[in-house]
Image (cartoon, rainbow, N blue to C red; front, side, top):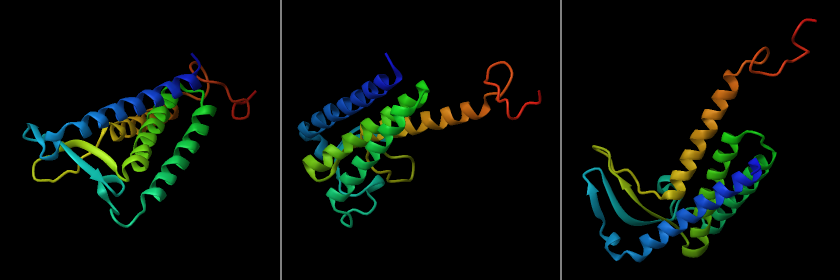
Length: 168
């Protein structure tokens, strides 16, 4: 499988798992009031009309937010198409799948469906969904790949030689 194909498979899996989980959340009526799993975690159905953490709710039209998400997915797809690094392609695929999962919510529901609620001690952490998890994991993989590529030697064993910087 080529890296391009791998990236699109990862994106499709992230998107599909996200949409299935949101369908289950919407169909589970007990999530309206919330289901406590642990003192710091519950399942609760929330419609997020804003962006991350509910910011700008009521200030931004869902169509504008969906358009931004689509533009980002297109830009990420171009980056993924050009990439030759496996970890980078997987990370970008997770970002694309998560972004498109939230975009579809905006088209279908006018808001993003969130259902995972963490409450660290002394805080009211907002709910999120598996698209958000994919986005965070994808960003984390891109950071790891960036740090790995910076630490690779530029010449000698393990890295390509650059004839412009080495003396004859």
